[in-house]
Image (cartoon, rainbow, N blue to C red; front, top):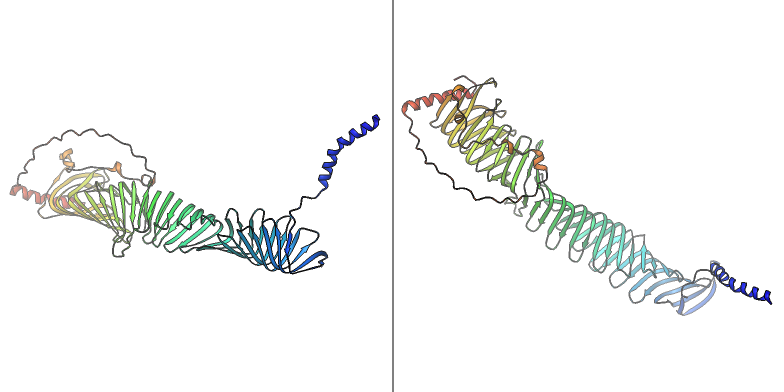
Length: 558
């Protein structure tokens, strides 16, 4: 009796172990059986060594919400699978329909392999491809022999792709082309949502449209709103400009684009490049604004002109008869190897190659400093040709002994050759101070002259000769008679400390500090003194002094 109880106890302990052994030895659970709904005729037989049922005429199978229709089929007796032939059609619920020439369906895995002239449709799109594999549980279709998707007004083709009929998301790879009424997109990696109509790409992508081209290596494009967001070497190219940046936004409907981070805007017609950290571009008006330490680069012969400001604005003219303009505002700096300058604001007429400088403009050419109320620079053949200085024009040049030769007048015109000053014409109320040197080592005196107009000749940026026009009054002052007052014309300033360097022009601009200005004290006024009219004797002395000044300017002793 005791032995029987022990055996029964051991038997109940062993039941769970037997269950585990049984489960481990069983195959995986099979899917729901594929049911034959109807067929016009049924035949039994053996196909490729396997027992089959051969079904003919108006064949219909069913599994869960999936139906398969065909003209004929083989149903395998030893597995939950079948092959369909001719006019094959598979439907899943009321959302997806696939047609093909033939198909193989695995009922356990719920996977269909459709072959020949495959068409997959849902309410959003139509996919055509030679062959297609479709996973009914995951609701994902895959092809690798080329496919075409028609999605309303959009047409997409690729070598390989997959489509999730539940999320409505396509993933295209290899030779992807998206054609819309406004753009042609080519890439090798594209995600496309058939509901939102948004294309997402990850890799080198080109978008060609009626108004220009777009390139980027990551981003998205909404085919309905025509709005694009791009990253990685993003560029917008129009007929005249190329706009690029780290991040780029573009609205095709409004023709507005914005670039951020390492922005560059290149003019194709005149070798002008503007760089900064942010750019806004209105394509309809041709206007672009660049901020974030913007710098303009104008490539000239064997040199480059750099210009920076707080903001640079480019206006592209739609009328060929009108000029395209570039505007620079606030703290403008210019650097070229042989020309530097600064002013508050500037405009550049690209058609006539004329630069206008406003509000305290200063230019340096070698050791020559030029100032006026405003200036015009004329560029020919990518070289500085002429400079016009209006109102209170003043020229200062430093000689080898650190003396400061000076010329002032109402207006001046400077002529350049190979970017070096060759001649300066002074018009109205002309005054000058020039030092006479002996062998560039000693001062022999100073010439001071007043007349209506002057003409100054230079050689290699050094004074060669000076001509006094229309009733000059001049005198030559020996070195021992020079006083500090005699060595400066009224309005003299030597502003070499403000001369921009290449680093200053290309470097980042610091944020502006707000300075609260104190009210200015009332200016003191002094009565004007009437200048006495020179006597005849003084006029004769002035003529002799003018001759001596001309000789000294030419390196001769007076």
